[in-house]
Length: 68
Image 1 (cartoon, rainbow, N blue to C red):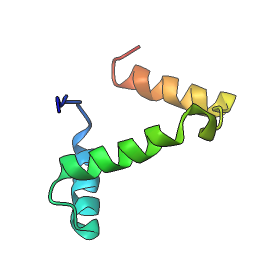
Image 2: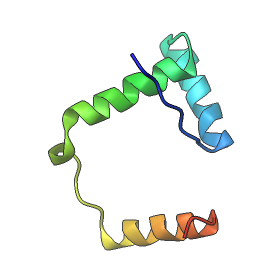
Image 3: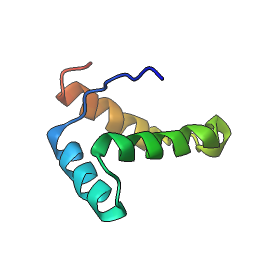
């Protein structure tokens, strides 16, 4: 099976590292693959739409990071 890499903030990685250890995953990659797989398997219908405030907060964060 092919794999791909994504970039995440260091702080997020460190939290995932602790979570992976607490849950007994052999690696952060395994933990992330499991969590993302669970989210994706729920499908788009399981995710509620963002509120206008949430969208604004996300836009602000992306702008602060230089993505917008």
